[in-house]
Image (tube, rainbow, N blue to C red; front, side, top):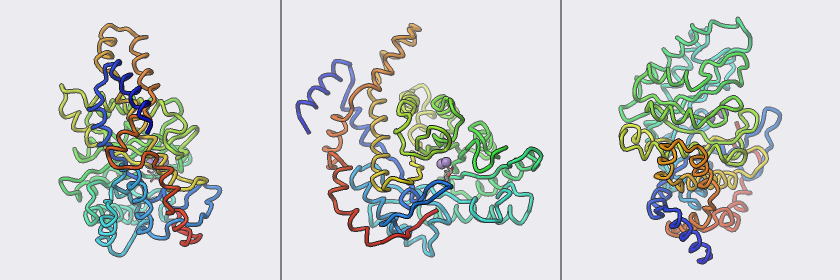
Length: 407
Ligand code: RM4
Ligand code: MN
Ligand code: MN
């Protein structure tokens, strides 16, 4: 790294009144979980392109995830999806993760791929289907315990396509019953994250359509239930950072699924389409972390689970994941450069233009010199992407051939 560039950066931040040591410490603590499914073949409903070198088993997915962590130092955990990552012996999966310097993170029950679930899973009018779906949820709680994870992360595809198709309120009760049973199976230190999405695959109504429904459900279940915000799951124009602020203040923001979108649930690489939104999300989180008047809100903010949830269709998967993690780090770093005292003054003075300028100014800082110093201090390659391409790993995994895991 060019020392002159670092010196210019440090001098500039000093002149802005930013304490860089604290910023660096916070940056070193940032952890972003990557999803096992992001390493497999995935795509759109039109086509899944089969790529050579794609992992064939959950064990190989972990090996790919270990590359991302080795080079970025930020992704020590991997989310799994059941049954995509179903194995006979979860103890072995856990050991394999640990041998790679990883751990298994959120366990995601998949209730959307079996024929039985065509009309819904835990909201299906058929009692035996509901039972099967609840049993799957309970099995996922047990898997989480077996792999040493404290998070079960639930997204439901349940909904209807036509007015009158089903009894919406009845379905709500079935959902609440199922989640209550699941919640009761959690150990005291576990959390149930409830993810919402306003449409797709259902197009008329979705049983958990927005943050309000997820929040209401979490509230009814108890303190171990929290809301998960997937950045791709809102109608156009939604102020996602506002939702983040409210959920933080209500102490129910459990985690994120990061990805970027332009139109629907596009699941593209986070930070590629609307980086300002990502930055503004971190602005809200950091503001909550600084709020000494509300220690319980600070605690909520401290334990947020940051996760990537993307579908890599045309891009090579491991580099896509490295890019994703680096993008999150970049916009997190920019938010750390907000001048908080000046911002509070501007807000107290109701100085609209100054307040807006302070936020935008942080966003416009070039944080690359800072990130390079942090990487150097963490013993990481200065350019993780380049290091990956030079590592030979991509060539090595070609021997896996075509036809790896897919969803
Ligand atoms: C959903 C949602 C879930 C993800 C599935 C595959 O849209 O984002 O989190 O697991 O897709
Ligand atoms: Mn998601
Ligand atoms: Mn999604």
